Length: 460
Image (cartoon, rainbow, N blue to C red; front, side):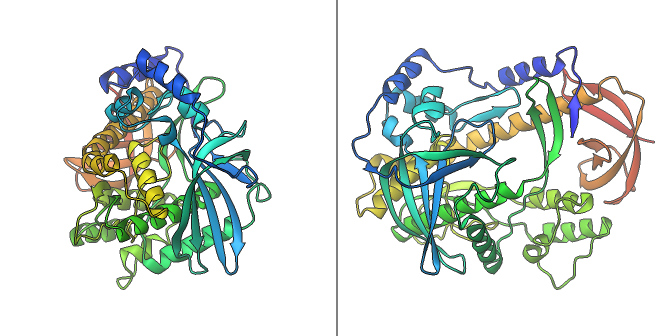
């Protein structure tokens, strides 16, 4: 981790420029804010009282837009996951001002100095968020997880819940979470292995705002608590996807895997990094053995992620099995409706299916339009994230032109190689030839320009 020294406020002004360049919304129109304030006062009257259930939330410490709360109980040899998802649809009606604005955004956009929410704070960080300061309306999905990790949707209902605690990834203790939390994660991991899933979670560059107002650029691996918590969403999303597919409706998250040429390129990368990858071991099996704490293995994990073809959304199509290669399953997004537009419609669909009701026509109609809207939003979010990282790298290195840095080659790109600095969380592209993946280089910093969000290194 590296704290950024920025006395000239280049990072702050650069983030302002990014917001302008990528048209990041600044607040909400007055009519949307007014509609949200009115919606926040709606009194739930279609919800069962489940305030006696011991729900908790687990998120980053600073998060206030809490989509999910959970409780877990044993049912014979099975585990029952009660997964409460923020009932955004209770507050947002089809075609109202809040809904129309959300369709222009698609998702929440995150920057180091703040976010541009999908919904106004009165809902996303207030009435609809599953904070522990009072009862909240939610949709509770009951997911039955067998000993082998197979997940099935047992039911869904609108309910009033009360979270017992707002837990944080970096401070949660085993005694804080419901009994069965770790076992649930173990079962889902075992099931992933049995399916041949190939999810890759390498450390990623992240620009973080600290409590004192400064920023930090780092490679941050997932904490164990984050990985375990992700297992709950995985169980729910797979169970909901299976239920939608069985009823011949829904919106799915799909992704194809790398082709044979890309797999061979990854094998070459592993060899260059001096990593042993037996010829008889598939990519799926091999990548589950990689340790993100090891720099060389983390570098290969990043290359595996880049080799993927990217995920997208796909509505139900007769005769087509929607497939997510990394999950090795039919998969959907349902568990973050405060942050992703599509999830609100998937929740409504699954709620109807679980209760033997027809899927509302506005939901079915939305499934055909959402892939384009969500694809555009995902692309925009990715561009914003990359721009913020490029800016932070340039700010970190400004003034050090002429200095030399040790680096490792991680991949080949057009007209050069991609490198990772040995002592700083910086990834750069260098024009060089006759170099192999895994080679160590000494580089001289030629320029670092925060205004252009660019850094240029030259081989020594």
